[in-house]
Length: 414
Image (cartoon, rainbow, N blue to C red; front, side, top):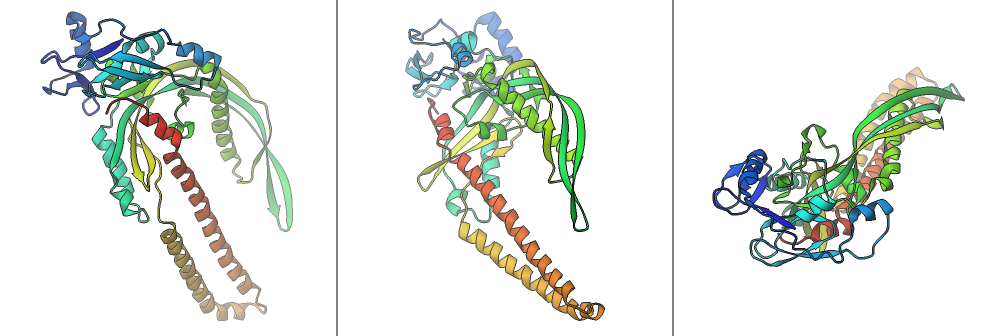
C-alpha cells in the first residue's frame, strides 16, 4: 500500500523538510507541521491511501525472518504502483519509503509501515541535503595530501536514509581484579587492583539492518536521544527508509558485549596503569527494555579511479564518517623530512650541551643516554604515525566497502 502526502493548497506531493522540521510542498512552497498536516488529513483525507496495490503472494514477514534468523540468498521484491503517474515501482524487501523512478515522487510504503514496520520512535532529519554535501566537501578540501580529483568530486548519489536501530536499556555490573606491573629500581613487581561497580545503559543503539556494515553505522554515533519523536510516517516522506531485518534475539548478545566493553574501559581508567590486564571478572547483566527506532543518515557516493566511495553523515548531528585516498608518497616524504629535521635539531642541542655534561661527569654515559632518548622519541613518533596510517586504511576500506555501496545503490528513484 502506498501513501503520498498531498498539499492542502495545491494537491501536489509534500516532503519533510529538515531545515524547519515541517512538511513542505515541492510545488507551491506551502509548509505545515506534522501535527497540522495530520489534523487536516484526519478531516479531509488529503493523501493517497487507496488500498493495497502490492502483489503479496510471495511476501514474507520480516518479523518472522528476523526472529528465526533464517538466511536468504536473494532479496524479495514487491511491485507497487506510483499513485502520481501510475508507473510500477520495484521496491526491495526492506524499503519502507522510496521515490518513483519516473516522476520522482516521494512515496511511503504503508503496508510495510503498518504491518511489518511500526517503529516506536524516530529522530527526524535535521541536516539538509545541501548541508551534508557542504560538510563533506569542507572536510575533504582541508586534506593536504588528498588528490585534487577527489577534492572536486562529482556526486554520483546523495541519499537520505532512515536506518533501523534497536535501543537497549541494560543493567551491567561486575566484580573485577586487574593485574598490572610496577618497577622499583631494577625489579618489576606484579600488583592487583580490585574494582566493583555497576551502571545502567539507556537507549544503547544497535544497527538492525543486515545490509549495512555495522562498523559504519556504529561510527555514526552518538545520536542525541533527546530528539526522539513518536513515530509518524510523515517524517519518511522525501527520504528512503528501511524496516529491520535483524531481530532482538540475534543481537541481545551483541548488546551485552558492547556494554561489557564500555564498562571494562571505564574500569581500566580507574586503575591508571596502561599495561593493566583484566585478570578475573564476575559480571551480571539484565536487559530491561528494547525499543525500535529509525535514525537518520546521509550517504554520499562519488567515484575515484573507477571505484565507488561512500561517505556517511549523521542526519541529526552532522558527524562525518569515512576517509578518502591520499597521496602516500607525499605524506611519507613529508614525515621523513620532519623526522630528519628533528634529528638535526636534537643533535645540535646535544652538541651544545656536551661540554657542560662532560665537565659534570667523568664518563660519557649521560651523552649516550641522551642520544638513546632521541632514538626512542623518533621511534615513538613513527609508531604513532604507522598506527594512525593503519586506522586510516580501515576507514578508507569502510568508505570503499562494496556492502555500503550496495546498500545505497539498490534503491529506486533519485
